[in-house]
Length: 299
Image (tube, rainbow, N blue to C red):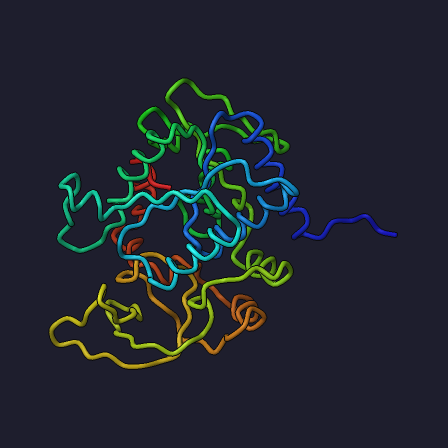
């Protein structure tokens, strides 16, 4: 009989150890949960890590007001099905009461930062789990599993802590916080293989479906009330799936015939660009767009 662990078993075990470490050493953790594939994997692992008890921390979603309606419906379905303590911080509410102003380009990505920081401060959270992975984007590749943030929620890439032999450093001064990434060492392919193995339910947006689209700046964008056609644009219908789910007006789909998880895995085996690289317009502002946001307090 062999007791060797598969690569997925090792990644799952590491993620569980990260959850246990944070719960054991931090005062009040929270999980950032959008209902996307990475946060669903985190949720699944957390439920296994603390079974048969309940997950000992709440969920937090920063809702920009530009999310896919299907994603929000799925988020709420999962929260109800698993009796999660889901808290929603609304960017739209901040715009409505004047604390934030809609940017000229319509992107609410950076507007999430003050809303997130306020939600963490108001909730008294000293550690926040996030679903970021190192293979997604160059700035995330530089970040540690336990990412130290200063009293203003900011990240300094030059002040990264060593993480040797899976020994995690949770020390922080009063007012400082941690962002913790249990899936940091996973790849997109690992996530999809884990979803298939564990039978994790997903929003239908991740699988091929037909919808109305417009091609804009090299992205196949969904046409919706949140993203109406501009002057001179013409829509068309095609079959696409979304590798990543951000704000609807900025998230591009890819033409695909993958209508089940196995077919998605087959497509990922030949992918040469990360999901953020192919589908997120908000990362195209500059080569350092993600790092700039993270320095200010982004996920």
